[in-house]
Image (cartoon, rainbow, N blue to C red; front, side):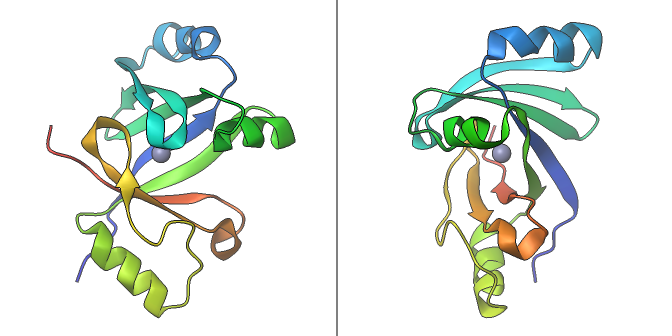
Length: 137
Ligand code: ZN
């Protein structure tokens, strides 16, 4: 049986990475792991490491990006919480069996070769929740 043992990252929606990277890198002094485009989600992400947890800033690449819609509705801010799993398929099957509403029935590609799936926030007190299985680095 698979288990969720830790938070992998916190996703924060921003309208501009350039504007917000300096706070996380230079003021908080987090380890900056670079930026990457994730075409599947129409975003560019900047990753920071703090202990075992990452902070993921998400900048929309187009108006159709879910991040663009989020910022339009709610403004910049915390977008999602990502829990790490070592078997995302199994975890999703378990969620389906428990009738948890999913956004992604199947895992899709996230940053750094990871595979991710979002659960519907209705099941999690309106916190958009991501399952995340790290890729081979
Ligand atoms: Zn994420």
